[in-house]
Amino acid sequence: MHIEVGDFHPELQHQVPRLRRMAKLMCVPGVIRIIDWLRRREAGSDVMGLDCSTINIPSSLDDYSIRTRIYRPSNVSGPLPCLVYFHGGGYIMGVPEGSAELVKRFIQTRPCVVVAPDYRKAHQKPFPGGFQDCYDAMIWARDNADVLGCSDKIIIGGHSAGGGLTAAVALKARDTGDVDIAFQMPFYPMIDDTQPTDPQRDIDPPVWDTALNAIGWGAYLRDVRRRGETPSAYAAPARAESLVGLPPTITYVGDKDPFYWETEAYVEGLRTGGIDVSHTVYEGCYHAFEYIGEGGEIGAEARAFTVENFGLFYDRYVTGTSTQEMSLKIE
Image 1 (cartoon, rainbow, N blue to C red):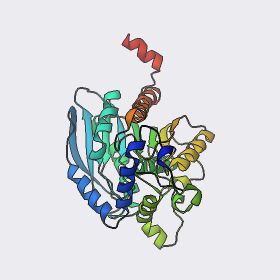
Image 2: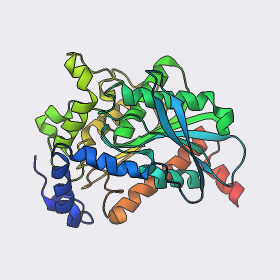
Image 3: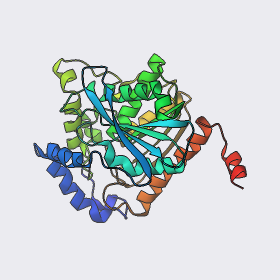
Image 4: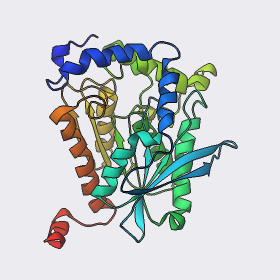
């Protein structure tokens, strides 16, 4: 289904043609690998105002070491909650450093230690590679809380494919009881592998469209499909039979994003399961509109929604401090 430029949010319309051309270019064989290589040049870069370091976490799948970035506030001491953050990239590209400014905003909003794994992309190791790397990072954070300077409170989050990995990790944590996650933040999560084959959801917005989504899922589920198996809910969380018992959730999505329908279904399932959810939809907005290109005021609104709700859920589920109590302390 073709989306006309005039159907997008007025503040985003001027950059739709350029970003659409970029999305088409990414469909050319080899281009995604080049983009991933370029992004990897950011690896190891620090963020001003934070204590930054790199550690290697052993994989439970094989002898791989998961390069992981650690971000800490430089002026706060004492045990802090841990946010395990998974970057986006369609399961096929990206590095944690690409989300460093967002990580900084989380830390500035409420003090926490951020553990950000550079999980394996599909060309390195298809599912369960990236998923298990993310789960291993969370378990490592749990087991090394003293070393990290963390409390027993763990938050998980991510955007796009990172949101999908967040949803998958939350499912396994619920099923195993390994970690009691305080809350999760799967922002416009990539969770439904059936989207590319559904003509009712076949759309062509800029940044990430149905064609790119087919490439991402095809790479991530390559081994699963070759064996003729049905993907598990840990591979594609939209396949989960029940969302009961998952942690409180913050999420949002644009209604011109290929992930719009799966995000809405996920939110409905969470609410049916009695989960506390903070959710909104941005009309006329495509995938990652608030970070790619010039997002205008609507992009600023989405970024504010992210950190404000992070603060609210932190107070509610990490410290147990209500907004009213916080305001009294400030006064």
